[in-house]
Length: 342
Image (cartoon, rainbow, N blue to C red):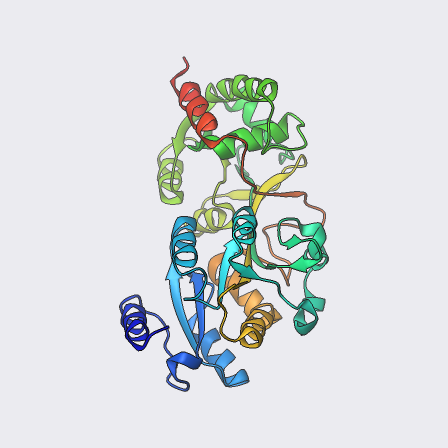
């Protein structure tokens, strides 16, 4: 990286509110690309105090932005970044990430059992190499009003119950709606559906529409609809964050992950192909999966973490990690047809 580029990066970091550590020169600092809430200032300070490694953090707001930054520099502008399992294989195939030496991660032995066997997690390995260390997750479950829905539901199938006609909030997204409905119908792979399965899911979603009061796109929008209408059930695209926000306004709601499986996202720390100091990057990852950081992550964001149990999922809950779907455009077109159906 040229001196000019370093100065530009420093200026951009200041504008974005990046934590710059004066304890080390920029060329020696670990360069981190992260979602908001994944590299809080106090954690950065603690990491530097413990390791002597300075950190520069750039925060991102979308999967497309991560790809543009990593692909644009062929991984040379950042050492470590956070990405979900549905996207990670894309980086592996493009040779933009480096294998992680898990033996150097002393805290990996303390992660929850379901995240300890990395080959069983899916999407974070290729052959014998590990490319991602799970850090944060959330399920996409079901919120129900405890005063209106009794007994407590156990399956997403309750969304089709005629008793709740006009009292269901659904998320306006074709990909996710096809996937969760496929799980409800018993399809084992909700992300790669045959034409016959797609047709069955479409029919099922047309049925669901008859129970839906409204479709929402943001958690705030769902909350406003809930406050101003008679709502019993919410397909919770924003998981525990959504539950927490509703409970903070006094809503009598609870949350379940359905027995057939809940869609879920899983973000991982990965090391870029252009990493300057791989040992420093692995120290960062090891620090981020400490019990202290992991529990504070959940307290601050509502997300689940991979080290301590949270409300996002119990040990027996079935989580189905999001994956790329067979045909995003086809799902989008069919979803528009579903919304337009009488």
